[in-house]
Structures are given as structure tokens and as C-alpha cells.
Amino acid sequence: MSFSFSLPSIVALPSASLAEEVPPGQCPEEWYCRHPEVLSAFYRKIQALGPALLLAPTAGANAACLAEFGLEDAGLNLRLMQQAKEAAAPLGLPVGGMLGPTGLFVPPLGEADFDDVYELYRQQVHELVKAGADFLYLSGHHCLSDLRAAMLAAKRKKLPVLASLTVDSSGKTLSGGTLLPAVIVLQAMGADAVGLEGNLSPEQMLEMLEEVLPHASIPLLALPEGVDADGKPLSPEAFAGWCARLLDAGIPLIGGSGLTDEQYSALSSLAAVRVIPGEFYEDADNYAAAIESEAFFLGDDIALSEPFDCDVGLAEDLIDIDDEVANATLVRINNPDDAQLLAKEAAMTRQPIAVQTDSLPVLEAALRYFPGRLIIDSDCALEEDVLSPLAAKYGAILY
Image (cartoon, rainbow, N blue to C red; front, top):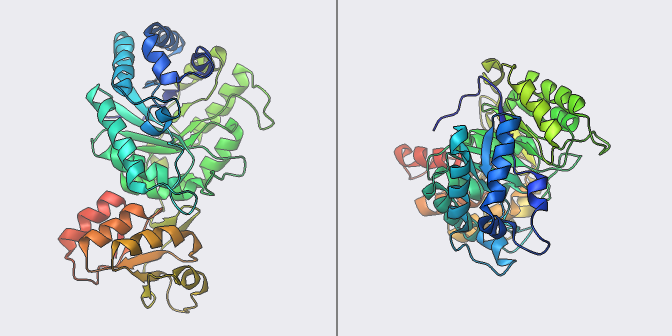
């Protein structure tokens, strides 16, 4: 299934009222499976309020979240997606599967292994796609490493992938990341849209997204709370007014988190009469490397430093580099442990990072674990026909 963004699309998040149906202490996803009539009623309400990209309520159905309730998947993703598809069939609208945060963090924020987090998402994606998901939505993530793991799992199935971050009022994620590096990284990895979800008013979201827009080559999305910057509820008319400004700014995927029926209805009426000009996403300035907290825009010429060894002194090397000529730091990696160390110390850099290695498995490990967008130094023993597909898969820059 393909998406067109010439007209606005509403992303219909499962509503707060849906979650309120779940008794305290019970797993929402498991409870929905036992009460399919609740989902059917939700989709009927969405149909009455206006068309949308529908979502199955599977955000917390990864194995890590289910384990907190003493549950295993046991087909939950498969059943929820099937129920959503059946309920939405009369509407003729696409239904996506949600992949929310696992709650696990890789070093230096936590002790989780990136490959284990990836495997959680791979299993969930497999079930959602088997049940007929039309697209995948990476919902409200708190760190770039988690999003990258979900993105790698999602893109294996060649479905459209939408992705969102949740940030605080300063624009920071729980791990200290910001929206711009996430957009740079995820669009390079093949995301179909990236944006913000929840925790902010439409006004706050508009300001953050407008800053990113010149660097986005894919559509942006905005799913704000139905409140103003002080947390006070917006009237349906005021909420729609702010969403009109989002649309006019060139942000075609809109919706909301915890909206009232009246706010959602006002949003649907608005989206039906707006057109998004395509030139918003032409000539994006996105030739940039990135770490989770910063994007490094590159000029016409990349001047690499002398190679640094990836050892216990790497963090100090990244901080202390003093090269008047180099505008990118070259790190030599020799084994998988080097790749893990580079990912752990990446936040210390003051320049974009390039990696050099003669080993394909080591290079893939570095690209896989690095929480950002790397430059690959092609001056190595590996041929370009080997390097190019790898750069494309991980969104790296081949130089």
C-alpha cells in the first residue's frame, strides 16, 4: 500500500477513552483481545468523526512490556491487528500496527543490548505484518537507539513506516535527544514520515517542526495534546485553528493525543479542505551526520582527521580533538567491541564521525549500533559495491 501526502491525513491514535475502559492493573493489549466489541465501537466512532489512518492498539505489545504483566505475546499482536482490520473493513481505510517504546535503554543510559531490543521489535513486526498491517507506526519513542532498532525491524517488511518522538517542552527526549537529528537519521534509513507525538500543545509542536522543516525530505507529522502551552484544554475551534497553522506550514500528517470527540471532529472538518503543496520537501538541506543530540551539516568537502584508535581513551580523543584542517573525526575500528565502544562514547564528539575498517562484519556492527548517522570512509579494502548497500540500509554517508 502506498501513501500520498498531497492531501492531509489524520493519524487516529487509540483514544484515552479507549484506555479508560481497561481495569486498573490489567494489560491493555490483552484486555482488548478479550473485548473486541470495545475496538469495534472505537472504529465506528472514528468513522462518524471523519476518515483517518487507523491504528491497532499494539503500542505496548512488545515482549518487554508484556513481561511486566507476566504475559507472553501468545498471538496478541496477530489478534489485535486482525480485530482492527475486521472492524475497519467497512470504512475502507488503511490500518497500521503500533510499535511503542520497550522501556529498555542501551549504554550509556542502560544495560540493554541493541540486538535484544531489535529482536523484540522483529517479533512484533512479524506478527503485525502476518495479520495484514498496511503500514507501521513507531509511536512516541523516547530515545533514538530504540527508534533505530524499531526502524530496522520495520523496514525488513517493505511497508510504509511512520515514526514519532515524544519530547518535553524544551524539545528533549528522555535520553537527551532532539527532533532534528532524529529526522536526519530516520529519513536516511527510509522512514516515510517523522514527527512528534503527545506531551506538547499544537503551538509548541508547530515551533519545533518549523525549525526542522528545511531539513526534511519526507513529510513531518504532528500529534499534539488538545491543550494550550499552559496545559489548559483548547476549545474545538482553537485546536482546529492551531492545526490549520500546522497544515499551512507544510505538515500533512496531523492528529492528536487524548483529544475529545469535539476536537477530533473539528480536526476532520479542517483536513478535508486543505491541500499541502509538495515544494515544502524539495531541496532539503539534509547532507548531515548526526548523533542523538546534534546534527552536523557537511560542506562540499569533508576533511577527515588522522585516524583515532577505538580504545578506552576514545571519549577524551573525541572531546580534545584539535585539528585546524579536519572537519570530521576519523575512528579506526578493528573488531565488534570497537563498534560497541564507539556507540557508547558517541555523545562526546564535537565533530561528525567517520569510521574506517577493512572488515565488513565490523563495519556493519558499527553502523548498526551507532546512535546516529555515520560517515563511511571508502578508503579501505572493501569495494564500493559492498559499501553502498550497507550505507543505504543504515542511512550512512559513503565518502
